[in-house]
Length: 392
Image (cartoon, rainbow, N blue to C red; front, side):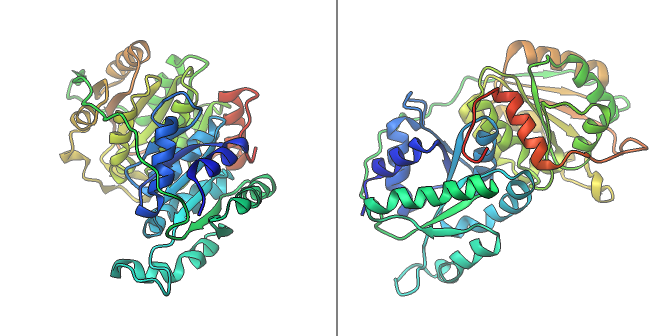
């Protein structure tokens, strides 16, 4: 059995100091210690962001790496299913490393709840299948350094995730000293809609490119938003997400928290936002003043044939305000978008800019010709300057 602080100190010495995850009873000592030592903003250099889902935690930690920090994701092995999509379609193409600490509920030979039996049998093989090499989480202080060094070799060699599988009782108990969260002040809602013909996505992206300051960074969700942004203007401060649908807002939160001095804009879609709606709650709880969340809502899954989403029955502005956003602005034309973006840049976030747009895209629509891993590294260089994180 080890002390949580011993592992945390050894990880921090290797540049791994940004944690995100979803709790498990096996992880209680680790999570409690990270939070108590400063994970809620206590100034120790540690951060812990509690996520709404394990997949969101992977996106947040990946965003932290883009912002120059080393990311650690902690979750129960029952949540590995939620991690698979970003691990395989975000971390692999962008080659973003992180340390994944997952528990071993349902370990063969140990009594556990029935829902953990199958996952306990396949935890390590599932990680192997996803291309995540893994070792047992160290239960002896002498094993901590070698385990972490094995992760760093993986980061330096392949720039991809590495896993540690934690058995019950690996870490000594820790108490929790956490400041309770209070309900944030009610945000402001602004309705600039004119209920006429909706604009195209590209018309709004053109205004975005014209209005954003040079220091702003943009993360575009998977699908046609990123493809149109690339076609209009390929810039080092743009990241065109591929795969990991719904993960763009979590990635943007990770970047915003690690680079608070720089405006971060996430271009989301209605289908993607609905897939990870819990990310709005996480963003609202963390209150990043530098985050602008632009939701381009055409009511359909445009990339797959135009099937309807359920966005017509969702009041996204109300959802954002209920989750703690400082403001939410609704628009449905170019002039309203122009005014709303100027207001968001001036007032600060987190702000949701919900824009109704037409389905469809540019007649001649290309795809990014820069490889995702190169996009990630030039983006990180832009937002951090010379600051480096593990696996860079």
